Length: 369
Ligand SMILES: Cc1ncc(COP(=O)(O)O)c(C=O)c1O
Image 1 (tube, helix red, strand yellow):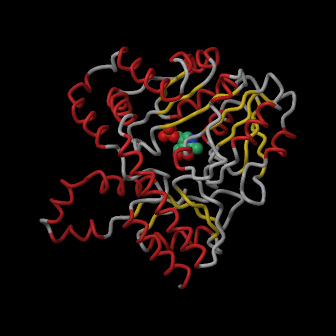
Image 2: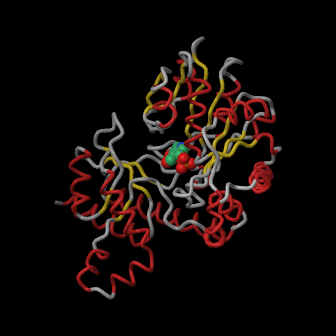
């Protein structure tokens, strides 16, 4: 990890302090410097614009209900709203404490008793690592020259031991995405006993018209489970809510493999956020504008980068990542960790506009030092 837990907690404490903390600090010159030097936290692929105004209001209204379990009718109302959003029945939706919980549950479902997965390298490792700790194996297939999933090579690694293929589209950490048609063809060509787990956490930031959700394949009877999260475009990473879309049978199995159920604040915030279209549109516009700003700057600096389709950019710093991240940290910008085998590449999350300005300034200083 390029950032240790203590640093993260310190940064989070400053961020979470919000306006009240800023006001207190503004009144105390000795500590005002702390705010001025608080780090730009660009290492966790969070969306700093969230939660949406509607979600914040729902949380504020619900604090006193923190003594209650989320009422079943409210959970069902959220599942219904998600089902309408996805165009499926409620029995096909499984909500989880973040999509991470569902990834772990899928790691259990398909990984126990010597299960094998196929996944790209590099990719998001929550499922493979959780499954590995329970005796499962993942066959990693390097991404192609454009840092995209190499679907033909992944298909070639599927054999009689494979239980599931994990496809992260757009992929974390590379940010690249493969077209919907390519994934559809891949899924249709899988042996009947192999499931495709398609993680679409960043799908809302996609601009490539050829890329899209493959949740429609479920209605065709294809073996697909799609995962989505409220942590990214909805900006609710700290509230923890995600969901899966699957056939009713696979949804039932996944529901039974969950470890817990989401908290009352997350359930209400998610329900409100789904309808806050103004926030969602504005967030996407701002993040995409900053993404273009970053790639334009990288191109100007002659830095190679993978075509970004998420709320982050993966680029070649031209130096060992440790050196780069230390220099950025000295300028109060926290960047993503190392993703082997990309020893010189860095993943930078798209923060607020002022944070992007700080990143660009620090990047120039670091590369020109
Ligand atoms: C590809 C991908 N899937 C899932 C997750 C987990 O998200 P959640 O906050 O919903 O657990 C992340 C988090 O960064 C991610 O990058």
